[in-house]
Amino acid sequence: MSIELKSAPEPAVELPQLSRSLRPSAKAPVRIVHLGLGAFHRSHQAWYTHLSADAADWGIAAFTGRRPDAALALAEQDGLFTLVERADGGDSFTVVSSIVEAVDGADVQRLAELVAAPATAVVTLTITEAAYRLGADGQLDRTASDVVADLALMASGSGNPTTPLGRLVLALAARRTAAAGPLAVVCCDNLSNNGTVAHNAVVGMAGAWDAGLAGWIDANISFVSTSVDRITPRTTDADIAAVQAECGYRDNSPVVAEPFANWVLSGDFPAGRPRWEDAGAVFVADIEPYENRKLWLLNGAHSLLAYAGQLRGHTTVAQALADPLCLQAVEKFWDEAEANLSGPDGNPAELQIPAYRAALLARFSNARIAHNLAQIAMDGSTKLRMRAVPVLRAERAAGRSGAAAALMIAAWMDDSAAAAAFQDPLASEAAEANRLSGAERIRALLGLVDPALAGDPAVVELIADLCGTFGELAVFP
Image (cartoon, rainbow, N blue to C red; front, top):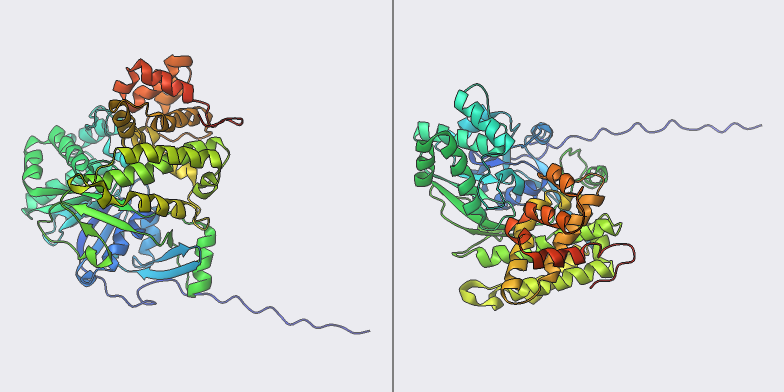
C-alpha cells in the first residue's frame, strides 16, 4: 500500500493596491473642478488632462453625482485608476493620475471652497442630459420638483442643494463673494449647443434665487461648448480581474474604453486651460457641425439600437448591429441625418461623413466592448430631442417623410411599454400615456418629447404606423 503525499497549496499572494506610493506621481494643484465623477469623465476629460504637456499644473477635483461610491473607491487610491483601452487585437493599460481629489457630491462646502479658489480656472460637467432639467421648450423647468426643492433650500439657507445645478450655482455664489475672478464652465454632456444649454440652466437657477448672482455669472463665467466622443461601458468584475492579472496590482476603479477618443471645443477660457490639444483635442470657432455629426450619427444610432435592439432581444450594441433589421434601420437613419448635415462654412466635405460612418460601424462592431443597450436607453425623452427630433423636423421641412427618424421615436414608445425597468425622467408620465390606445397614446407619448410634433396629425399617423416595426415577425418598411 502506498500513500500519496500532497503538498500544501501555495498561499495566495496579496497584491498591492494601486496608489501613488505604488506608482509615484506627485499631485498637481487643483485647477479644474469636475461635477459628475463617473467612467466617462475618467476615460475622456481626465485622460486628456493626464496626457497634456502641462499636466503637472492641472489637477482635477472630481465630485460624484447622486452617490458617494465612486469617490470613496477612488480616494482609497489617491485618485489613480487604470484606463484599459480595449481593441479587437488586445488591451493596453495606462495609469491616469490627473484626478487629485475625489469627493462625495454631497460635500457642497468643499465644492464651494474649490470653485471659490482663485487658482481654479475650469469647471467641467458630465451630469447627464436630464440633469439640466430642460423642458420640451429647451429652457430650465423651474417647476421640476427637485429644482423647486433646491431653490427652497437655498432661499432659506437651511440646507444644501441636491441637484448638480443647485450645487454649482451655490459654488459660483461663493466665487463671487471671494472676488476670485472669471472661469470657464465646460459642458461635456451630449446636448446640442451644450454650452448654451449649461448657461441657460445655470443662469436660470441662479436668477430664480438671486438676480444679482445671475448677472454676475453672465458677466464673468464663460460657457464652453463641446462635442465629446468615446465609448465607455460600465466596468465589470471581469475587467477588475483583468487589470489585476495583467498589471500586478489591485485597482478597485478601472475604466474600460475603446481606443478611439475625440474632443472638439469652442469657447473662451478666461483663466487658462490645460494643453488638451497635446492629446488630440481640437479647438474650433463653430462647433455646431461637429456637434450635429456626433449627436445624430453616433448618439442617434446608439438610441435607435438601444430601443430596437432590446425589442429584438439583444443586450449590447455589437449584438444589435449584427441584426440585419437593426443595421438597416441605422443606415436609413444615417442617410436622413447626412442629408441635413452642413460642415464648417457650409462645406459638408469638411466633416468626412462617409469615413465617419464607416468608422462608427467598426467601433460599434467591437464585440470586446460590451456597451449595454439598457444603459444607452436611459432618459430617452430627453435624448430624443437632440438625436431624432432635429432630423425629423429637417426632413419634413424638405418635403420628405422623415420615416427613419420617426422610427427611432416609435421604437422608444414601444420600449416604454415593453421594458421591465423603464428609466426616464418622465417615466410616470410615459406610464400614464401607455394606458391610452391608438393615436391618443401616440400623441401623449410624442408630447413628452416634442409638443409641436404631437400637434401634427401627419407625424402622429407616421409614428403610429411605425410602432411594432421591431416585433418578432417585423419587416422594415
